[in-house]
Length: 86
Image (cartoon, rainbow, N blue to C red; front, side):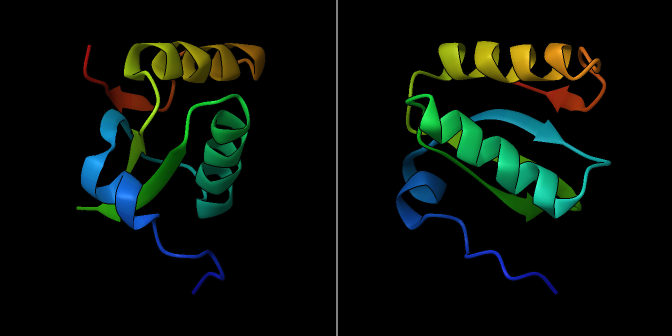
């Protein structure tokens, strides 16, 4: 079990999916969403079918770009992004 709060209901209902990801720890998804939210893209995640679904209420194209930059800076350019709309 983890101590993370459930996905923000508004983001879960109205957010645009920017990625479906796998092979990361829940702490990593949480940290990534907190970082994106801090950059002006309200973002949260939830598990669905064994994958993490990343959603944002911000501009989805810009949020995807920020997400990609985060992975490039970490040395993993697209390693964990399975799918994104766009």
